[in-house]
Image 1 (spheres, rainbow, N blue to C red):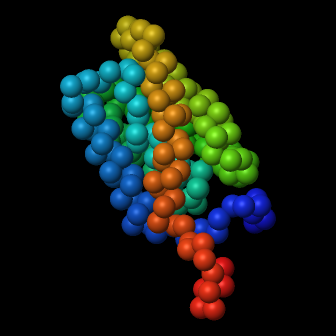
Image 2: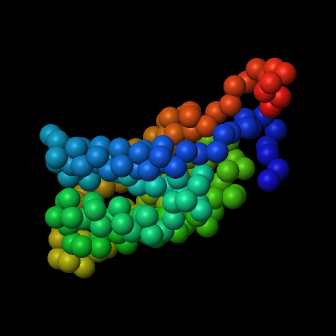
Length: 176
């Protein structure tokens, strides 16, 4: 693959780090949902953020099936309608895998504008499933969740790509 000028060369992603970050995001999601905010509509979905990140950067390792399994785990944890998060995560992951090649050509700032529709689509799918199940509208605060997830995208890029970054000073033993 041809790299953009100025893009650093990355080491291969460690599968243990990928799965550890996804499990950590699941744990953080569970803690946020049990905390003082409860299951507030404005709380960012950190698991969705991690899934989209790894779908974009490692689409062959983390795909739609993984998103479905984590969605079922979130449904069971929240006591939500079984399949609500699974459907949203699956659709979001499918769209992320579909656009991953194009998305990686943009700088992180431009990527944030392109992942916003992914997070918004997942939120809309969850809302539609809730409405079909007979729940009411959560209010305008539902718009803050995808916005906060989008604002966390640059931080996720820094944190989750940190173990893959190569040293910048080449020497005789390390030419790249």
